[in-house]
Length: 148
Image (cartoon, rainbow, N blue to C red):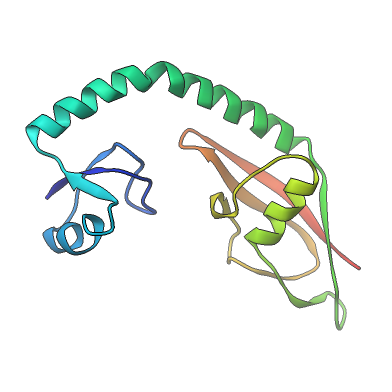
């Protein structure tokens, strides 16, 4: 079943991509959730026209994302957390904490675009996360967790 995605879908594709999925996944999940529409010939023509019109706007978005990526590479973020024995944290640090620390530094990044290997961090030290600012701009962001 060919579908046109209306929004980004994790591990499937980005908005306005034409993807092929199994019938049940498309019919029972993607279409009812409003994440996709059927890729009929007329819908493909409309999509092609919309993509032509959006091309120059996309270039500006990529440029802005690249500027933000350069700014994030220059940041030195230190997240403070309470610790127990040695280097073990009380609780954990996740993508929401990283997004909050970046916001305090003056840059807005949504937490859903931040991927931390293992999803949570439970020890002190230096770590890195992948931040997807645009489908073409992904930056590796380093940060450190220190004791409070």
